[in-house]
Amino acid sequence: LHYFISYYSLVHLWLQIRIEARINLVDANLMRNIGVLCTRYLVCSSDYTTFDLDR
Image 1 (cartoon, one colour):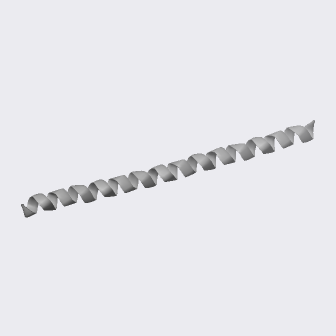
Image 2 (cartoon, one colour):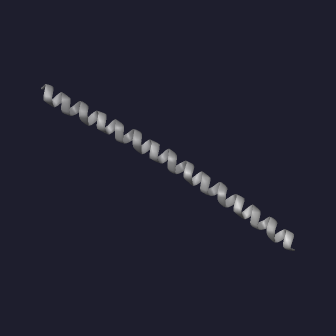
């Protein structure tokens, strides 16, 4: 019984680590996408401002 409990706790811990790693991966992808969107927005807004200044 003790062996079964320790095995179950190991599997539970492994699943928890897998889920947390997946969440961290999603967070990393989300932050990268947000960074790309922010840089794209800044580039577009700076292009618009330079266009207005040129005009």
